[in-house]
Amino acid sequence: MKPSHDIVLFDLDGTLSDPLVGIGRSINYALAHFGYPELPLAQLAAHVGPPLDQAFSSITGLRSTIELDGFVAKYRERYGEIGYSENILYPGIPEVLHSLVSAGMSLGVCTSKRVDFAEKILEMFGLSTYFNFVSGGEIGTHKWQQIQALLEHCAITQSTVMVGDRAVDITAAHRNGLPAAGVLWGHGSRLELEAEQPRYLFSTPEELVVLAAGGSRRKHEA
Image (cartoon, rainbow, N blue to C red):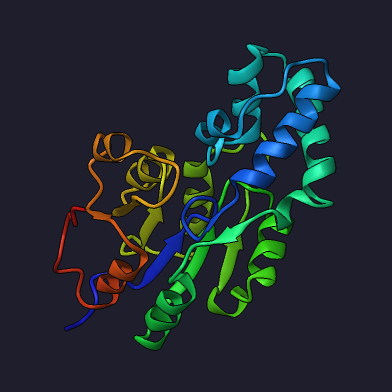
């Protein structure tokens, strides 16, 4: 059966790997530097996925771009040195990527993370060769704008499916007319994902192989 999708566009954090320790410790590093109390990692899980300036704004209540840029810069100071490596690859991901590529699918990454950090993580896990491109985010750029730019540059098509663990991944895809798949092993809840009505909802990485088999199975449930 011919696949329904030509390209699978993956989010990184919470989809391919779990970056909570590195992100959480780097957020706390920035908070402590500016005199704010550090937060438990469990509480910081909600900030894995969305852009960093939004995370710091939510935590501190600040709205000033200059102030938020300071938090992001301090965060990146630690993250670029060690935080990116405090990361755990989800079991089964390499095998699934291999299966998708072997089935003739093209793969890409679209993450709010800065592109050089994303590439370092993919290389660390030995995943770089599976992806044709990596789209990374910058402060002030939304994920829907990243996807829009990929479409404009013909890196993806309207048949591309976006795969991610947070609502922002689903809404960014839908805003550009792309189908989306939510994954339940990341940091977004079932309620958060179902509210955005993704075409697919996967409980385990192994289920992703359906994207290369015609996409006939929809809304997987745990």
